[in-house]
Image (cartoon, rainbow, N blue to C red):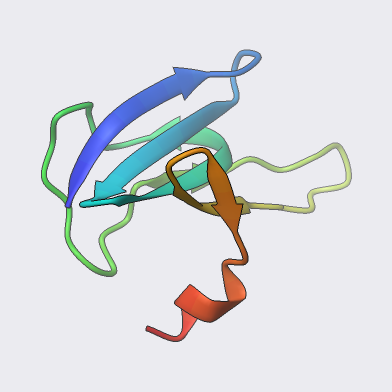
Length: 79
């Protein structure tokens, strides 16, 4: 499992893309990233800190992709 991208959306918001072979997971709305592109990562490893809005609420957007298709992440969370 490998970090294939760290993207800046609108400072200071970041996305982290992790490759799992034929699948990608994308973690959006991070205020801080502690992994680097090309770094190997493992299950339960912390990738960064979720950003908070003006009310102090933290919201992570999580995506699972296969090619250009976005999959329902609900099927993957329990794995």
